Image (cartoon, rainbow, N blue to C red):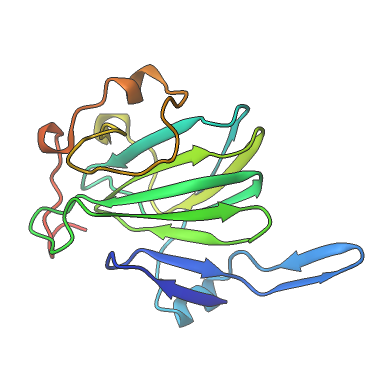
Length: 187
């Protein structure tokens, strides 16, 4: 597995080895041993699966506050997403900065979203299935969102009128969100 570092500390893109022939392909999407060799030491405890029926569905920007924060490893099994990760760790040299990555069923890439980062996805094609592993359980009392179109973040989603949940449409700006992440501390 190849690891691609991004400008955000800890946020990496993973490219698994894919073995294909006339029948299709095989790949190892997760191996605790391989991840540990790459320095990715997470105790992954749950798999989540979402389907977005329509292209232009935006989910995010989501995170859970400490001590219930989650690391996510995200991939698609059908379709394609623009995956966006925002550094929300107060005092971080990259606070408020984001990266975006194209994650598709065809490129087999995965992205690691550590604790202390807000995460969002925009589906680029209909019927996109998203799978992600997490190292913490969902805790509704710690669930938070940042507004997808926060002008200070200036995220280029490439889509002007996405399909949103009420929760995401009404999310606060980063400067107003209840966020207890401090760079170098509780993550």
